[in-house]
Length: 449
Image (cartoon, rainbow, N blue to C red; front, top):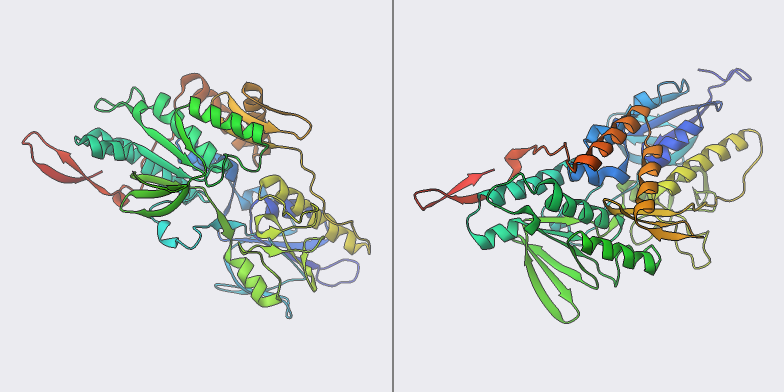
């Protein structure tokens, strides 16, 4: 592939990460006179805003995933590689993967973030977060195994521990998980068991500051908490988790210390940058914030390297607000940044440039449950059925592939009218913890479920 004008190889744009930022950058470069290589350690794009529905059995993983090769198959200037970048050489303009080395003219890094346990990484095994398909399937397994184990358990205290679900973090992910779990316990499963009443399940949402949904206006936070409580969720704000051990969550509220027994603990409290933030910082001297995100220039480049861009959740963009507050780590930010970088590159090829990046905030949405959501469009804020309806159509619209839109719409329609969730499969059962079940001879035998 040569540039017809000067018989030279085309400008090579390497994009690391197939999330919203990387994928939107690649799509926007479809007709540009460049060669694009998109690298991701997975072979699919994941629509993360709906991942919580996979975790609670509302959708299957394939409903919100799109193979990257299929999405970009008509982009004749684009190659997709499955691999993980291990190093960057900015002077030689090369990146290293596990099994090969690639040269680039422009590098776009959009590898996102992972879970942040604030120095308590040992909690990860007991309290999984929700960022990947594997996380969602693990959470789904834990949730439905908890009900199965409670059905077999004869000791009331142990049964209560199986029916205690603790979610740490009251941001959008925590709120959505809590609402979905409450609907699951109080509606979907209520007629499926004989020895337990699933509506007795206790869903406890813990948030460190004084309200849920901290990025939203206080009045919407209050409405979200009221909607959660209507669903049966117990919300505890100004509550800090100090330890997770032996299926006990230790919390502190003011001067009070309490231990909550729970077999199912889910983490939605914090995020930290992927390893690429550290790799880039070490290779280029780029500054990073406390979460490891790369602090970028107004045009999303890193200092002294105008050919290296960092976008999406991995980027700390402090230039839009007077107080230096970075842009939020949400999908619309990553989408707009990906499109901006692609447009900037096309301008550069013509010897032109673009003004600094500016995020256009069209509003924020968060769903709590059936008929319950909150919407902040800036000029208007509201909640309830209309907000839920808008949330539904916005998420269907932004799904990547047409068949995903159809599948999700059909699934949601079925779930709406039947209150059933069809993807309630327990997978990887060998990883389940043993539970004790009392048999008719009145002795206890460990049984693995």
